[in-house]
Length: 402
Image (cartoon, rainbow, N blue to C red):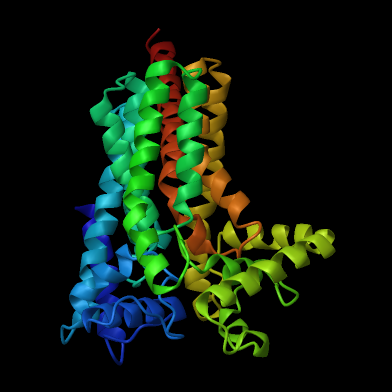
């Protein structure tokens, strides 16, 4: 309820202040809405270039429900507030499963009050949906890691939620592979776990078959994810790359005019590979810039650089990141294998997304999938600090009484 009130309050404030409440602010929002309108009009998934497989279908198809409404964008934002609130509740559930209810409550409140999660909940981007589905996946896997319950039904749940994750954002497929591999290593590849992981992975592949077949029919090749990988990688490593995104200009390059969707993707992928091979030093330097942008405690967008915004962002983000590091260290120092595994498990999204966006463009929005798990670690540190303060106070009271 706290999370919902904060998101609805911020979103309503933005709507009231806007000249046009239905207007969209960022290019990706406009693209998603355009694709949703295309689906709603019966033309299928199609972006501004007429390409049909540049995004995973679940999010624009979901927006299509609202595209035909007079104020559909506003209604869609309201749904995002609910999804954002659900992500906070799911964070609390995952934390309580891994630790206890007190850590769960604190972690849920951290996710509820997170200013970046609140801000993005009013944008028509995949971030809010991806965070909610990813935390749900981590909660389901957490029950397997913590409780050792490995029924086939639970692995089916892992597979179904993982498939949802990929259908929202294609980059989730790598994180799912890492998470399943982590569980296998933790269980030393025992037969029961191996069967469960195979079930989950098989369900993800099976769920992608209709999408891949559809792409074979409409673009001419079996694309299991999207045709966006090439341009996204080029945006991050091409000769023009700075760490920020410049897709608007890249799409207008003379070299790609008139190319088909498949040729377009292949051209950018080939040029990206050439850039990486020819200038490895520049790629390493760019990686540092991208990670700095991704984990920047301040917003990167120039329109959100007021002293108030920067202060709120820093006051929240810096202590949270420090507490998360402390929480991870505390779990590691405990020396129990289970605690170390839990720390690594919670750090996996941050590590994976950092590795991914050391190649692709870096942005604050791309770290959001890892933030709930980071805040669970911060909650662990807060509980330890509070307990030690209380113990210190109790000792002092005993000394005074004596």
